[in-house]
Amino acid sequence: MAPQPTDWTTDYDIFDKGYIKNPFPVWDELREQCPVAHTGRWGGSWMPTRYEDVFAIARDVEHFSSRNILVANVAPPPDADDGMGGELIQQYNVGAPPITSDPPEHTWARKLLLPPFSANAVAKWEPETRELCRELIDGFIANGRADGASDYAQQIPSRVIASMLGIPKDMAGTFTEWVRGFLELGLTDPELRRASGRAIFEFLYACIQERKANPGDDLISYLLTSEVDGEPVPEPHVLGTCFLLLVAGIDTTWSSIGSALWHLAQHPEDRARLINEPELMPQAIEELLRAYSPVTMARIVAEDVSYNGCPMSEGDRVLMNFPAANRDPRVFDNPDDVILDRAKNPHVAFGVGIHRCAGSNLARMEMRVALEEWLRRIPDFRLEDPEAVTWAGGQVRGPRTMGIVWP
Amino acid sequence: MKVRVDPDKCQGHNRCYVLAPGLFEVDDLGYAKARGDGAVPPEMHEKARLAVENCPERAIEIIEDDAQ
Image (cartoon, chains in turn blue, green):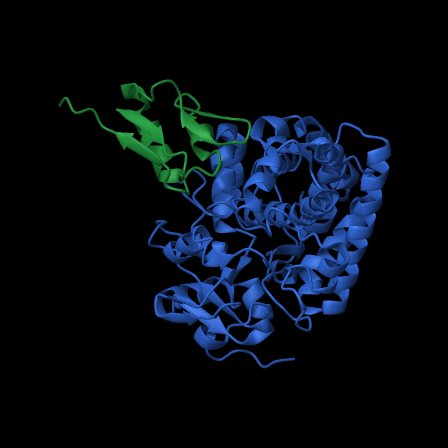
């Protein structure tokens, strides 16, 4: 194991255990001392921590490509820098459009994906999500304890996306394992990442063949029957987009729900407020998303460029530290305080620019319903042992084991 | 007062629509525009400013009336 960094401005380690648990002091220091830090670890990267820099780089798609959005590159250098780990792209030649696309492909690929994820479209999934949350709570409420991460938060997004894809919900546990293998544990374990990615691709490939024969009212069929410029969407593109839908919506939303519960377990005054002022929920969700933003994406420098004096070379990785940007005191008053009705909150938890998270409305709905149902049934709760909570970090930050108890 | 959404900047975050559905509408892709001619009645001025302050893309502009 590599030694702990002594100078975070030139040698930060996004997988350092202490940093994963509590990254906030590091970000505060970097923002003031070295707003675009650098490291040689994990394949090397640059890391902006100020809101203005993250905002500017995210919007400059000409100089900062999305062709690889993973925050680490620990695999042997692949022939093609595909964001999926060389071998996979050679085998499937798809990527995960549109998150791994640059314009012009990005433009039509995104247009194709947005309608089923509009606020109105995801509202159709709310009753099923609510029912699912109720069943999960029914399963553990009598015990007086549950793991808020693995028994609750983790169970929600995987089942909702399975429903949307028209895949049996009993696959949800397997999905979660694959996605963690690809996006979480696999970022420091190339073999696991490759195996997980392959399992997802092979499963989805079979689903697509099945759906071609028996189209239904689901997202896979929607993509297969859609047209772009009068032509059917190429099948490899459908495969890549399905891969994205599965991978992007599970770890991320699960982490947001978990972090929100972690906060509420320690803040009775915020629980009381949400119970007494339920109309505050949409604004509170935005604030929890800001304070505990789970997702960091990467960009690849498209051509040598000097950014604020940093000599970035073609092919360098830049970590889009949206979570750090969302705690920048230049933009947010008292950024470390959770203020449920914060008036000014232009957070970038879902990114900014053309790659704004396509699933943001779905994530918000799942988060709101998960918290509403939990607070309705379990209004008074606390962490079993705050020190025992474990966190994942790197690409997606959130609690992974979190004992919660109630009277 | 009027509000205007710059269609080149809006990325469909839906923040303005959630904060002030009386002032903004969104299309099937989630992109926002001002309702009607964008006119903001006095009781909605505060909401319009909130929408500006919460848009991550800085896509919303307030046009104050010239007549003082």
